[in-house]
Amino acid sequence: MGTLTLIGIVIVALLAGVESVMDEFEFHQPILACTLIGIVAGDPVPCIILGGTLQMIALGWANIGAAVAPDAAFASVASAIILVQGGQGIAGIPTAIGIAIPLAVAGLFTTMIVRTLSVPVVHFMDGAAEKGSFSAIEFWQIIAVLMQGARIAIPAVALCFVPAESVQAGLQAIPGWLTTGMAIGGGMVVAVGYAMVINMIANKETWAFLILGFCVAALTEITLISLGAIAMAMVMIYLRLSDNSGSNNSSNGGSKDPIGDILDDY
Image 1 (cartoon, rainbow, N blue to C red):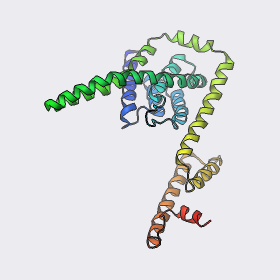
Image 2 (image 1 turned 120 degrees about the horizontal axis):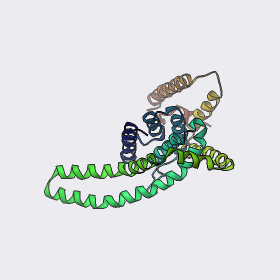
Image 3 (image 1 turned 90 degrees about the horizontal axis):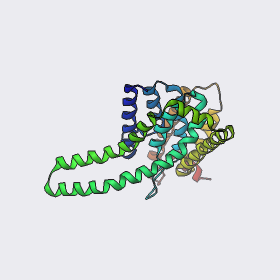
Image 4 (image 1 turned 60 degrees about the vertical axis):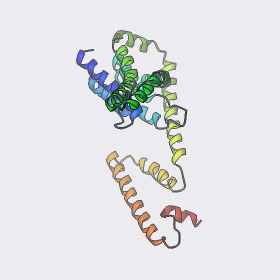
């Protein structure tokens, strides 16, 4: 792996780790992290497919209270590097997906380590605040953020120095039944991710759009661009009906939700 490729992977891994706590540019999302790794490593197509699949899995991952979700950033970067190092192309995607799941859980330990190390940083910033040193506060904030990036970048660099032949031999040594099982398990996790998202947003107003979306998606002649256009049209119609419903029902306490008002009548 060349020097420029290694530098590019370090930058992508650093951004993914930083964004895992900042959520500003979403570089930690699998579809972006895997794609960027594939671009800098010169093998974008398998990594894009891997990122898209992992993105479906990660849809249901969310931090709730003290419960921390699996680490999508670490799983995306590490599995993409393994996919590139393995040299199997698209054929290696099921194995990479199966590896990504335990990597996401392993990433929780690095997260806990970094957050534990960040506790003294908070006290340093408290001391700087008492002295009125804003530059010192900003310095320690940057240090804390870079620590989150380093927890992804350091393992990524370590993976890059593993000989490609060793990675290929390790992947080829995985029995077929295990590879098939990981692929099936990965597909099931995708369904679980969808189910978790649906469970969070499901209500009587959105079920109609979900059913309609499945029916429209089954039409093979429609392209993704057409599906996007149909979705935008549905949103515009819904918003227009919502505005009309709000203005017409402002005097009688309408909910400003046309579909909800209709369903309430039944």
